[in-house]
Image (cartoon, rainbow, N blue to C red; front, side, top):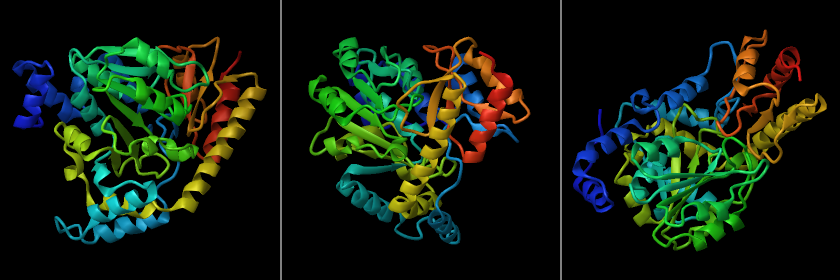
Length: 389
């Protein structure tokens, strides 16, 4: 089903240089978000298929959490499910927004809920990019923005990211001083590296006044690093995006958030369904888990312990791991073997380990998700059997 663009959305697109003939194509990609294969290139489709979980495999390829929501979230889902026969049985949306506002020290007016974070990322690209106003990102980074901008015929600039470092913000501005959207993912996917808030502020203060800065903090809870949400204040040129899919273990439950000025939220929502697609179970779960500070810290520490132990083992074996990850993933450089070969070899090993893929800029480097301690032991065992330098 194709999303229907309202008059305001159509007028907005036409003002930014799109033809009326292109409006239907844009509505199609917005409806698809990042999931419909018919709108993907062959490469993008292969990437999505590679991320699908394989039955019986050790699933450390898609940056999913190794476990589900905190017990309070599961209990909240059950309570909400019991009244799921009603369209609007309670104040789930208002309660969740109040909780997020309290935790993040933001006004409730600056918080918008979404059914996951893939959809709003596409919507932000549609809201701020055009045939004359392009997208600027790091390389490598999360590719949904690339695919969306490409489909919308917006120019794309990819700025190489140094190993172990965050985004090169000065390089991003130099790559296109007149972009419509600058996209920063921190911790970055796939590298897990942090772009300091000071660097983000520099880009915010030096980019064109009419450009938007999107900061994707999907993995922030795994790092404990400061959030760029502190930069929002009264500004109308920054969006901070979050998801509950990662540390909170809610990937299949679908709950995302954007933090921004209300006028900015209105612009994004011209091109997306927002909270209309959210279930009460997702909102109830999110409200329960978002304030679990002690459990968040404990889960983060559990991940760090498994990550550090695995990296230490790989390093001892003489296998290069890119430094600097502060998320539930790290990059392994196999040096003498293409990453695709190692991905296939590990899946064919007795342990049946499904790791992540590579990005074209680094053909011998694989992204590996940090799973449970047991998952990572199986990964090491499979590497022992399949990798020879």
